[in-house]
View 1 (tube, helix red, strand yellow):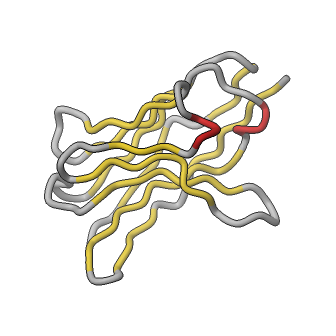
View 2 (cartoon, one colour):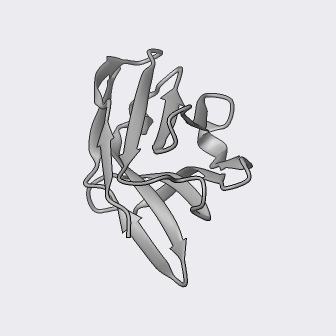
Length: 116
């Protein structure tokens, strides 16, 4: 198991930037993949970005070119750099770890609000 704690959310104007952090309770480099999801009320949680243990990344189309997922020099941190934010990016953002065997860990989320 791994515990995940997100931070970095807040209120920002459209066009602004935020960097979210996900601190894991152990080394993440052996984890199959780490990801960021987001959710708004009454909608399903959606995948925003992921990074594999080999460093490959993938993004949902609506954030390509604006968001970047990365792993920090510390072995237990994942970041989501969000640029040119739009009101539609407003959501609770969750850190996720796929541990293999169908097992996942989730953080409690951090709220991002983008004002127009």
